[in-house]
Amino acid sequence: MKILTSILALAVLVMGVFLYNSKQNEMDMQNNLRAQYTSRMTDASEKMSELQKSVQSATVFNDKAAQAEPLEDIWRLSSEIKSDIASLPLDREFSKEWMNYLGRLGDYARLKSQDKVPEEQWLKVTNNVAKNLDEFSYEWQNASTELLANEQSFKKWQKDIKKDEPSKKWTALSTTVKGYSESDFPLTASESDDLKKKELKSIEDKPVTKKDVENTMKEMFPKLKNAKLVASSSKEGAAYPFYHIQFNEGIRTGYIDYTQKGGHLLSVLIERPIGKERIPQEQIKEKAERAVKAFGFDDVEMVETRENHLVWHVVFARLNPTNKARIYADAIQLKLAKDDGEILGVNTMEYIQKETLPDQKQTPVNWDDYFTEQVTIQKERLAYTENELLQQRLCYELIVLKDTDRRSHTFRILVDTETHEVLKSELLN
Image (cartoon, rainbow, N blue to C red; front, side, top):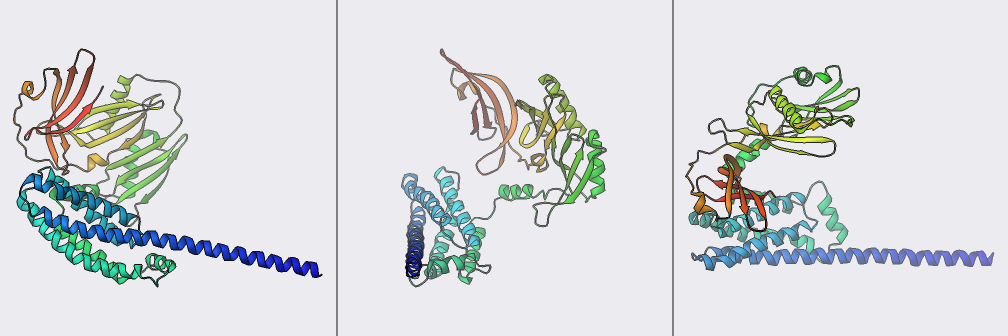
């Protein structure tokens, strides 16, 4: 009995030591994490102070060379503070708004260094930014103090961040930064247009019913006319309202989506086994051409085909009716089975998000002066592509051959028709 009692006492002692060590290890880990977070937050505060100074310095100089260093500092510090904020367990809404603001500020400084921002506009924006950063530093200090307080435990820090109702200080800070973004960096016309396209706000057609799109589906895809269907509406909060139709027909299963406004085809995915037979690429192209016309897309041109071991992927781009230029951003993607050319996939989202095209001059270019003697132009046409400001620009699209003694290379180059700036240069082979 005494031996058993001794063993139990020893077990209790060992367990106590184990629990104590585990607790101590947990506390050590929490202290280490808290030390890391405290260091990160302190770094972020110091860098914000440097960012304020750099913004002020960038408005002092008119000379481009003198401006270069503060502009580089703004871009660098914005990026570093974003990295610090991303690694800290802070209020999510605040983190999102603050990182967005820093990203826009850094991008703006980079565009200014490339002479893509007028001086008058630059001064207006940076004067606002400088004033707002001064005000923000006080609110940031006030909100971060409670997290850095020595008496506050790591557990309380986590609890404050994770609770449904965040600290009023952080909520206020989030609102403040959002206001800065809207005042200092209002959406450009192209960004606003891009947002509207993503939400399909340009569609003004009348709403259709589920039954309407089910009938449309059977007309577009005759092989699915007897399929079992389950149709549902998009969830509340979706970027745009659409109908989602799931189907099953023999060996075929998948889904088809249509917009609720107008019943436009959005996407298709059909799953079925692919046979071993293979039809020629030219026949695939013909089937793809017939399909887009049958779907009602009669203003497109095939611009790309590529394959894997089971399917062909075919891309079409919308043609501008006035100058027949390809609008690469308004694309339709098709997926066709290699055994018989059946349409297995469709994506029309980019096509439906119709681009707003600018009125733009077409200034002729002397290509002999533009390129070196080694270059020969193989093909020239018009096409639209976007620049760094998300603006669609009309371009001369050139397929050129650079021929040397050792080897030849083919390039695809897009040159702005008005500014003659190269917006894209791609080595094809």
